[in-house]
Amino acid sequence: MTLSIRNQLPGTVTEVRAGEVMATVKVRLTGGQDLTAAVTLEAVEQLGLTPGSPVTALVKATEVSLAANRVEGLSIRNQLHGTVIRLSLGEAMATVRVAVEGGELTAAITKDAAGDLGLFVGSDVVALIKATEVSLATA
Image 1 (cartoon, rainbow, N blue to C red):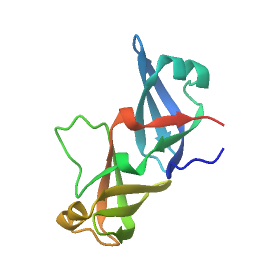
Image 2 (cartoon, rainbow, N blue to C red):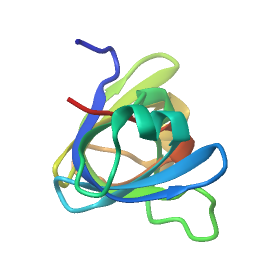
Image 3 (cartoon, one colour):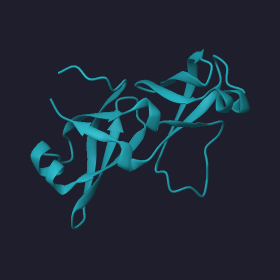
Image 4 (spheres, rainbow, N blue to C red):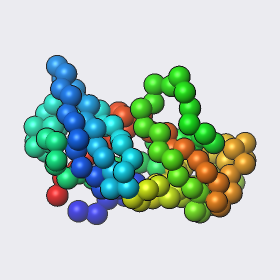
């Protein structure tokens, strides 16, 4: 299957914490950083997610925010450190390609935000992703 979702990061499930309807699934990405996904219990069962399961974490570029530094006091669980490797500025929007350990992420942000952050190729950034915006896929 080919997907339009640019952000596809391989990893391994390290923990599944089930609630009544939803579960949080912790994934150790190939590069060593951790990512949390909030998915339905039905998805956990259908995908057979257990510790040790290989998965691919999927995130739309529009769901990736960027910060210049790690942000404290924030409910967003996923903060991946990386470096800007490509910056494309349009009239209103920008796409920012970020190298993270074990892969790459693309963030679609406003051109103004890119300017306010002072982004350039080589900038250190933190990619922020809500757990509810991470989907998981198995082979």
